[in-house]
Image 1 (cartoon, helix red, strand yellow):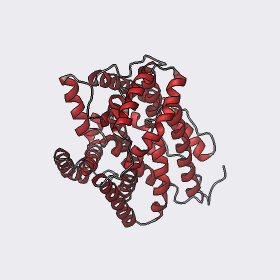
Image 2 (spheres, helix red, strand yellow):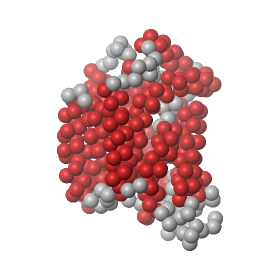
Image 3 (cartoon, rainbow, N blue to C red):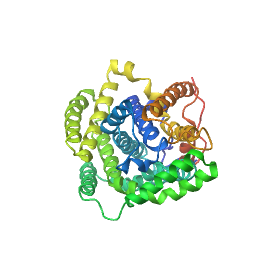
Image 4 (cartoon, rainbow, N blue to C red):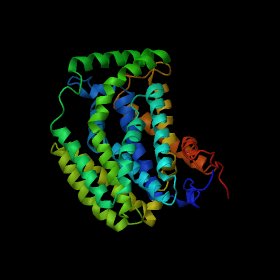
Length: 377
């Protein structure tokens, strides 16, 4: 590959990474695992919209309530903030390259291709497709000043909050349609073969698209907010400032959620989580306490896709067929066990290789040539 104006574009070296951001990504993945395994692999994603749900044990009810209040939507919000910051980091690193725009577009196009494959062939709870499309919208804003990022973030988050307060009519199917779909999902996902599950998964996509449309402005807004946080230096070794930000965000966010203002409370709580974790991870004691999550965060793409394959085999009919048969506690225990195994595997893998397998492929396709994989001394 020829150099661009004297600059040779390349992926960031592992030694140049900001460990605190990888720690946050690794911990956010735990929240994503918990919600995905409980709400989207264990049962139909649409069961949560039914007023009549199957009876649950007291412990299941307690755990589900904790997940809803403290984790659900907050983990994805953390990933959105991180994706926006990562996009801004890439944009900054390629500042002297004539190919900056084309490389970033290719990066998002490759992500879109991964997302569509994941969505159609593996699991339709995919978030990669939405992130790729949101990234393409956010990319032009990165050419502007910091104030533009801040105003655009507030505008998109304001649109999201307005949609929560005044939901668009006709966006979601009727309760009867959802109930019938949940019954079909329980039967087919639990007992169907791979082709049966694949066909039903594809039929589900038109029902899932409105769910993404409903949070799409929030995703864009959080991308912009993450990019803004990077631009103003909040994510670069500023534990004191971040911990001062964390306390009011967590406190106010929790109060809003408990009072019923869940949409705004979720955003503030996610901001508080991010500030607290990055702030603590930048402290000496925090590095010892949370450092185990950094390898997992460096391989978040690989681990996310691996979770879909593993949980698909555990819950769908072409594997163990546990869909609809487990309670919240049992499913969460499986999710935590898979997560713990990935923590160990990620540390082992990155002791030998520079990137996770999917991260390596993503970078290779982005830059147009095979990247070095083996770890060197």
